[in-house]
Length: 389
Image 1 (cartoon, rainbow, N blue to C red):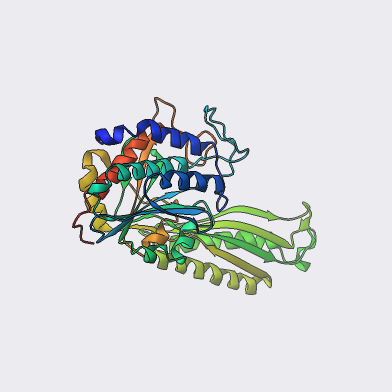
Image 2: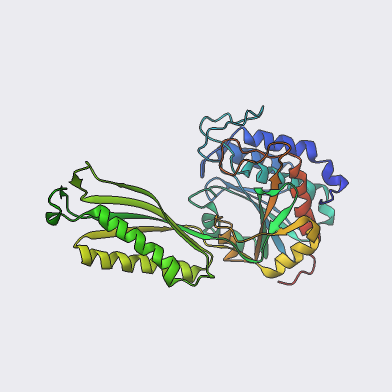
């Protein structure tokens, strides 16, 4: 169990109230106007220099340390999901069809509580602090917008930290791994155009469903026969739509899928192979196959020295080295620019019924975990002196 200092324990009730307030006003990506105002109003009371409308609805809080040699950033995501809440909580969502079902209300509460801790201890703070409240993590990716707007360069950020509440890990346990921890992800749509015709006269048609079946089988051979078995890759077709009647050969077929990998070169290789197989089947069947890719988040890649330091700070007894996760996170865009560390803070609690997964309408967590998150950030800040990366 991570020991909580007395000055952080004093923040408990205030931080819990912040979480409850934010939980009631969930907003989707780049629409976080009420959330943004709440954060701005709070930070302005704490001597932070506040910048709003960053990446449209994002907020940044900056505080100069007594020495100001380094700038350390901490990030929380702000957006909610288009999910109708079914938790029955007294502080449940007031916005119909929207819910903080991924713990972002907790992430913001932790970072605002950390801001209060910094304010209370500002005479002892040597490094510059940048608190990033980022919109649209769930999509289309507010971190990329933040980076493109030059936030990291503007404040000369040396390193960045972020966390995610995680219901697959026991409450209070921290999960992390060095290197690739979360996957690069992308989506694709496939449009197959054949030639419709009567099912009794197949020779006069080009069956798009048969082509689609052949393409799916070919795709699976990319993973099993073209990529090293020690390189994790997921290639999934999740939706197929085509055909009109049972006795009519389908002239068109539409498919949707997702591609995930931990290595960017592997990701590109799979994409190129998909295109090659599609071109081959076009020639074989005399059809047309179009694949539209949407490359999304890069892999979350934790700096090894930051992980080593993190393990020393948290302690092995409170930590789990997690297996690489095929889920994705746009925190990775910061890590492509500067050294960064992203970790999971466990919230699974069977006794309290906190076992529902992320993005579930009943997802919830124990409010007490919020001060644990603040303590970890405080320890990271206090133990960063002289850390050479």
